[in-house]
Image (cartoon, rainbow, N blue to C red):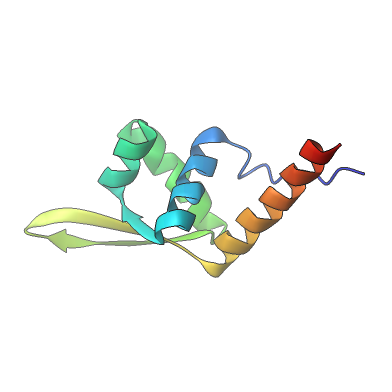
Length: 94
């Protein structure tokens, strides 16, 4: 029948973040904020949720004396995204 959809990725913002990272490999906080049109607080919360599941890795540092947050999709994130897309495909075919 139908596979359950991954509730973590079924959120519009988290799905947008993972989709963008799948396409680009990595990004930074400001770029994700701009692309998704989300607030800093919302992006921050969603990144933490994705990081807790090990779907992304977050590296904080400095660039030109400014804080810089780099975000990269992990193997687990890629696998979860592929499973999600496969599950969605079942709904579309029916």
